[in-house]
Amino acid sequence: MEAELLQEQMLLNCLRQQLDEFHMLSSIFCNPGELHVDDYSFVDNINAYIEGETKRLNAKLDYQLNLPLLSAEKVQIRIELPHLYPGIEIPLFVVRSACFPRDQERLITERIERYIDREVVDKSEPYVFQIVSWIRDNFGDLTKFEDAIKPQDQPPNSVTQGTKSDTFERLWIYSHHLKSKTKRQTILKTARDLDLSGFSRPGKPAVICVEGRQSDTQEFWRTIRPMKWQKIQIKLAEVEPLELGGGEAVDGRRRFQGFREELFTEVNDENDEEVPMSMSLFMKFLDKHDSGYIRKDIFGFDQTENVV
Image (tube, rainbow, N blue to C red; front, top):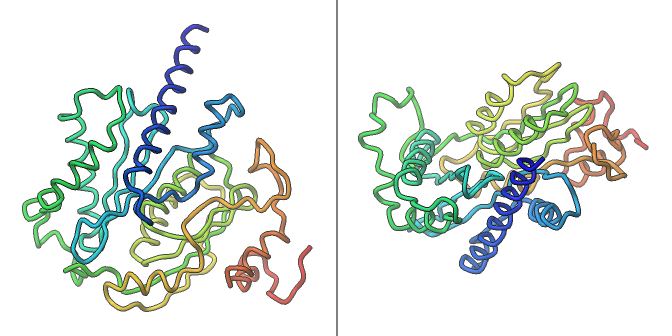
C-alpha cells in the first residue's frame, strides 16, 4: 500500500511539473502558431486527474512548436511527454521539415536522445526548454547527414532535394472493432507524427480516416496493419496528384483539421469504446466534411438514404 501511494505521488508530481513547464513554454512561444496543441482536452484531463476529479488519464501530453529555423519555412518540433517525465522517463522529440525525409527525422531524434542521455544532468526537473534551445542553437549541425546517409542508400527514383511524394492520398480504413488503449494511442501518435489529418472512431465497428502525402499514409498503414486485428481493411483509397514539394497543395486537399478520436456517441461513459455509435451523428460528421459518399463503401448504403 505504501509503495502504491509513493508511485501515485510520483506520478502527480511529474504531471504537475509537465503542466507548469507547458504553461511556461506557452508564455515564451506566444506568437500565433508557435505552440500548437492538437487536443486541449488532454491538458484538461491531466488537470482533472491532479485535482482528483477523475481517476483516468486519457493520453500523454503532447504539443508542437513551429519555429523559423530555416529561411524558407518553419520547422516543426513535436514533443510527447510520458506520464513519468521528468524523473524516470524521457520525452520524445520529432523534428520535421520538408527539407529532409523521414529517415533523417529518425536520425535527428536519435541525436536528441543521445544529447539528453549525456548532457542533461538533472533529470528530476523539466528540461524540454533546454532541449528546444539546444536544437535551435545547433540546428545546422544537427541536420548534417553526409556521413549518415550515403547516396546509394536512396531508393531508385526517390524524390530528393527537398521534394517529397507527389501524391495526396486519403485512406478509409474499417475494422471489426478497436478497444485496445495501446492501439488507440499508437494510431493517434502515428498519425500526428506523420502530419496526417483525419479521425479514428474506436469501438465496434471502428472507422479510421487518414489523409496527407501518400508516402505518409502508406507508412501509417504499414505501422498499424501488423497489430493484432480480428479484421481490418482499406475500404477506399482516394488518390490525387500534387505538385512536387507542394506543402500548400497538401493542406488545400485536406477535409479534416488535425487528427483526433471521434466517438459519435450521445452519452459520456467511462468505457466510451463500449457505447454504440450514433449513426446519425456519424453521418452528419461525414456530411460536414464533404465525405458522405463513403457511407456506401463502409456500410453499404448510399448518400441519399436517411439514417436515424
